[in-house]
Image (tube, rainbow, N blue to C red; front, side):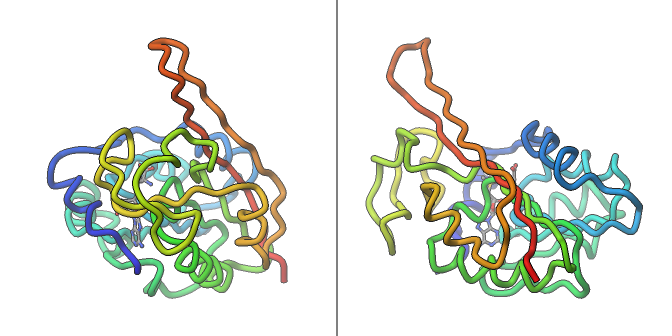
Length: 222
Ligand SMILES: C[S@@+](CC[C@H](N)C(=O)[O-])C[C@H]1O[C@@H](n2cnc3c(N)ncnc32)[C@H](O)[C@@H]1O
């Protein structure tokens, strides 16, 4: 299946233009994978509009990223000329065209816009790209407890939905929702050393909406 072209359409339409680092990602990197030198290599899957780039630039690490949206990649190449060649256009479920190995792979709400089979294959690729003892940090992998898991129609498997036309996932292509066992199963080949279920129940306006997602850190098992 691969990359949902709806993401490029969203960026062309000037929506989902997040440009400030995601606080959970900042906390997880500093807590579980704190970089220790400028040679520390980081790969971000699905960097989007580059929200997390200022954080990694501040840490002075060797940052690389892959995204499937031509609009996002060309905008980032303009904004960060020093990263041209490090931010690549690719469908990461098919190919991650970067040489060398990484200390850390991060993903905030990117892999979770693909189906289970593509996610599983990508996690194997990530594992091969990580150094021995390397880390994966995943932020906002949507949960089956999210209200919007009920929306749209089932795609290729029971964890993956498509054709959601309302709410935060409107017109974003595939959205994957996980439960704990599914996540542990996807990350075989890793030791998941931290897993948190974030549940935010909206009280005002009182509409019973629940945002639910998983944050995790995992270490490559040799
Ligand atoms: C919800 S946005 C998140 C963007 C960014 N990580 C952030 O947190 O602001 C999902 C991003 O993942 C990218 N993406 C999803 N599936 C992809 C795939 N198979 N290959 C490449 N990029 C993908 C989309 O293009 C989009 O930029």
